Image 1 (cartoon, rainbow, N blue to C red):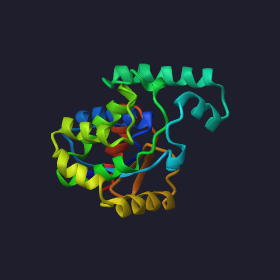
Image 2 (image 1 turned 30 degrees about the vertical axis):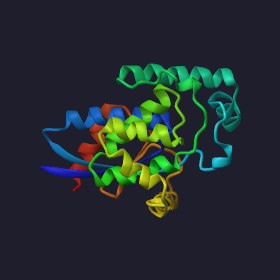
Image 3 (image 1 turned 180 degrees about the vertical axis):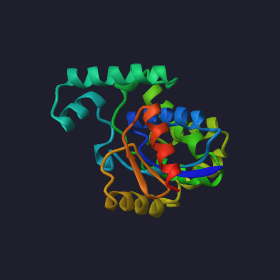
Length: 214
């Protein structure tokens, strides 16, 4: 059976990344009798400036995109509806604050070594979008680690150190230099780029076409 490697360039602070993964998951489930998949999460930061941490999301987005808060609220409400249909908890999407996610990305590198990267990523999504928790806070990060069944003391030691910091920065730079400027972005077999949170049927077609070329 053909095996495809999928690198998902994304940020914990990106709602479309959570939606995109659930759509990808549906596509992978549909293709499970045809293809096998290796999924790896790659780092991208929407809010790399930690000094700008903690601003309410609606005015922050309005300023970033040059639109009104009402427009942003409507946009977020639409995402909440889409997420609900995919089984994602986006209940507090409009109540969250901008957060720096660098430490969360470091923990995702660590979780990958224990085979729990996707589980931890989904726990981070739920903490941030479902409960509007501060995803840059050590206690919140460790609660997600515990929920995933990973060792919280080992995770605490990672956060207290600089482990994986260089790996995260190098990864971010590598994908920026490769031209990834928006997330989610899926890079299949380190060669084919699929941009955005595509619908499952679109992903099924794309993955079939890619597998036929390998």
